Image (cartoon, rainbow, N blue to C red):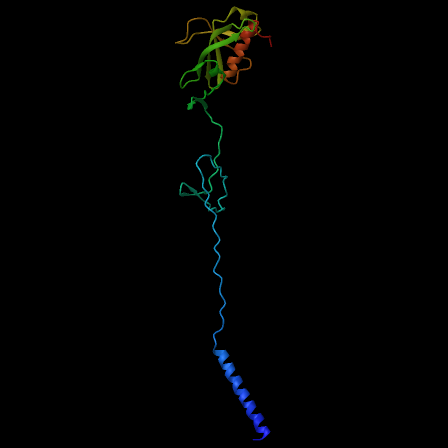
Length: 222
């Protein structure tokens, strides 16, 4: 066998050996990589609310969404927006005594005539009462029977038994004797003739009381 033939045979053997080694490597299983298991993040414990103190939750706008579950003794409570509550002062007098709230209707003033104890005839503009003046020194009160009629918007003021002190008052001549109507008390009734008539019942009563107070010396003459 010549040297060339030997070299050729060795090359063929080497090629065949390489092919066999490649086939053995391709058929061998590839190593597998281990996959890490997912890590679980612990959830925070639920908020336990003890019913000891009040919880103040400010109102939220309607557009705001809120889902905050609270657990009270094992039962879930959902906090939701609450409407705004407007608290206004009471229109009536309220008294609190020993934990009880008692509402009392506040007195309504109808005017000076009402505050001074005058009475109005139902369905009529007729007022009955007393003109009252007070001595500023002794605090003694003097009362004089009177009436006020409103006829077509005109104020008519009456005085029963004009006191003698009115004789020295410059308005004394404005008090003129008049006749007594049915149901009126017996006595001398005087109708006041106004140069400037009062605009309402209160003003009429106040003017007569001022004239009487001036006549008795309880007020300075105007």
